[in-house]
Length: 234
Image 1 (spheres, helix red, strand yellow):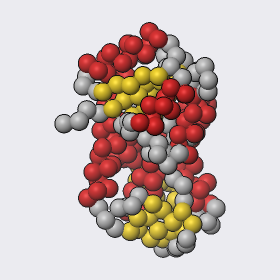
Image 2 (spheres, rainbow, N blue to C red; image 1 turned 30 degrees about the vertical axis):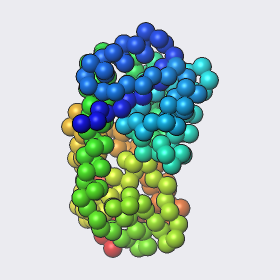
Image 3 (cartoon, rainbow, N blue to C red; image 1 turned 120 degrees about the vertical axis):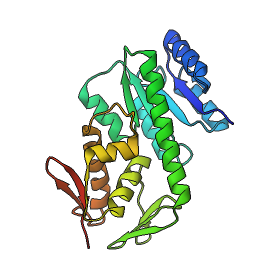
């Protein structure tokens, strides 16, 4: 069985070596880079299953790199965990809005890093398996979500959604009229082991709504105060 491939991007050598060693010991195939230029060279030749990306890097800050990877068709669905010494809430929110899958702040325990990597990898594998099993289209007032091709269109215009935005929209559309709690959305999309807070769901919903608003669909996702979200019935 092919090993899961992890790319670690961090310019602090001791942290790079520590994480690389422990992930290797846990059965992952590990690639390392100390800057974005090195990371880009690796990503040209390898399709990695997850990237651990530091924010403070010498040639490009991690947030800019995250945005770049999310706009590249080859890497737009690659799971990315931000690793940083910045612990402020605003930094976490910006990272999540740009498409980060998780956010680890330094100092951290190696066990925590391994646990989060496992959680994100399993969640991503579960999504891919679910997508491969299903072959159907969901529709709402000109909005078409194709589960098999993993695309969303309004008319002939394709919506550029991140992996988690797509999954949130799919789950809500599959359960039209039903309230989906934040905890349920976290469980289904981020996985049982996800360490984040329910605020994560709110951030992604807000970002998803802003994209739907462009097509006059700002009201299709309703907020049920104190509970969660519901996709309105036609």
